[in-house]
Image (cartoon, rainbow, N blue to C red; front, side):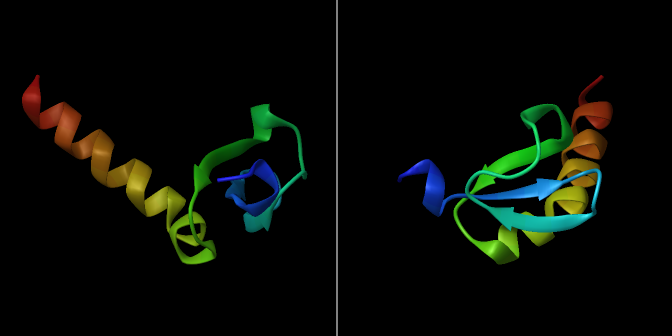
Length: 55
C-alpha cells in the first residue's frame, strides 16, 4: 500500500490523517483504514494491558 493511502493518528491534533501530515514523531500508524487510525489510542491501551499481563 502506498504511503499516501495509509492512515495515521496524530497525537498532537487527536485526529486521523491520511498521507503526508504531521511529523512521524507525533503520529501512530500506519493503519489501513481511517477507522483503524481513529481507534489507535484504544489499540495502544489494549496492547499495553496485554503486555503488562505477560510480565
